[in-house]
Amino acid sequence: MATRVNWDAIGIATSVVCAIHCAILPIIISALPVFGINIIHNAVFEWGMITVAFCIGVSSLYHGYIRHHRSFLPVVIFSTGFIFLILKQFFPSLEYWFLAVAVTFIVGAHFFNFRLCRQTSTDHQH
Figure 1 (tube, rainbow, N blue to C red):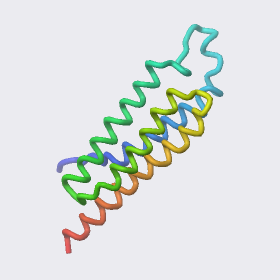
Figure 2 (figure 1 turned 180 degrees about the horizontal axis):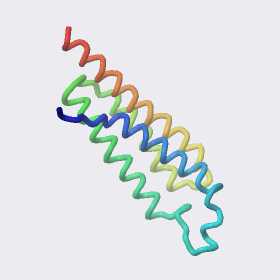
Figure 3 (figure 1 turned 60 degrees about the horizontal axis):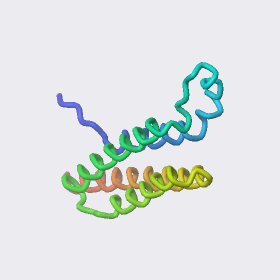
C-alpha cells in the first residue's frame, strides 16, 4: 500500500514551527551566546527556514492546483503571506507584526488548499 504525503499538513506544521522559532526560541535559548552559539537572528538560519517554507508551500499548492481543484486563490493567499515573510527580514522593528500576518496567510493558504483538495476528491467519488 502506497503512502501519500499530505503537503498541506507539512506546510502548516512548517509555518507553525517557524512561528514558534521566531517567537519563543529567543526566550528559551537566550543563554546560547554564552557558549558561542547564535541561531537567533542568524541570517543563514532565517533564510534557510524561509526557503524550506517556500519549497514545501510551492510543492503543496502545485499538487493541489494540478491534481485537484484548479483554483488560483490558495496561491494568491500563500504569495501574500510569503511577501510578509520576506518583509520581516528587511524591517526588523516590525518583525513580529509581519511574522504574524505571514503565518496567518501561509497557514490559511495551506488550509484552504487542503479543503479544496478534499472537496474535489469527494466530488470525484460521487
